[in-house]
Image (cartoon, rainbow, N blue to C red; front, top):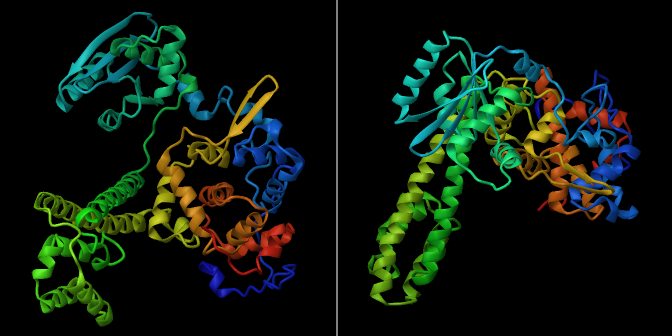
Length: 524
């Protein structure tokens, strides 16, 4: 149990009909969409099957999915999952306060920036004129900041709107410090489709792309969102968690390369290094003895002292490895292969040690930064989250609560909510492919981990596993529920309470109750 769960008594009988919990204020019971409204939509969205091909015996998953939901986020229900509002999913954006501000905001000029490797194409249109002025910024940061200074002088520090194509991290971070600049980063697909609308030949050039960006922000800024940064602590946490994930992926790549290379000339190393090649002990062994021939020349006592120095002190394991070395026969004695492989193995082992050290530094800095964040307590309360998942989830939500108007906005942004495609009588609902991958991974991976630590999440998994649903279909549905719960906690600044949520399940007579008393099953 998490937080207050440790101080409260919870007992569940096998009929799962009663919870022995002292009465206390609970969440409002869920009033999500009626099953008849939501059934067909979600069966398809998580299974990626066309609507017209569904059969009635596949409705049990959505039926259980919505009956198990017990958190309501608004009086009007959920727009992201309601079939009555499904036709609004891919249509024109509704006017939001942020978009209305874009429309009503007075700008002195509109600028499109198209960045290439060595230059930045600029298209500038003064407010109230149709003429576009083209220019080029050549050079590095000095040239960019000099151009911004001339811009500030020319327009007397009045606000200018700059539209640029993502990814443009260098430009965004270079311009974010100027208070008179309002940035409008857009998806590359938006620019590509806008360009093709006026150039069916698909001709493309940097100056014309800058023109199109300028035109987008001048004529359609009410459809765009101005970029506003999170606070420093949140942005640092976001950069740290993403950099750590890249380092973990790099460690995996190096480990796979090392394993493939060792199989070709020194397969005994895979057993001598233990379970993982990414450990400091494995890297140290391969740097010291990079071939079986070198290892067999070493004395047994030298090898034994090496294992002790690396904190590998199980005598039976060490003796087993020494016996393996004594009996081992080289796979090959070809000096051409062995000598070249030794250099590569030592380089890979050195790289693995460096990456391992970097990951440890990331972990320490993430823990320190997370502890300083004002919302840390909200995400630290999640069952089984730990510092790694808590920091990633906090970075995904950020600190600006006005950015996401509802849970549906976060569901769409993260890619957990499905996408509707409709043409005539043909309708297709599938997973959202255009999404921030790291944010999507954070929610999916936490949902998968929560099965081992949360009673209702485990029951949710067991219920749908019994209905013959595949593992990742269930995990995506579970992530959908977790986002709705986390959004409510985040907006109200209230830490998650497992006991409180279980009471709401009991109050709504959720079908999850009958699975709460069952033992855990294999989840992967």
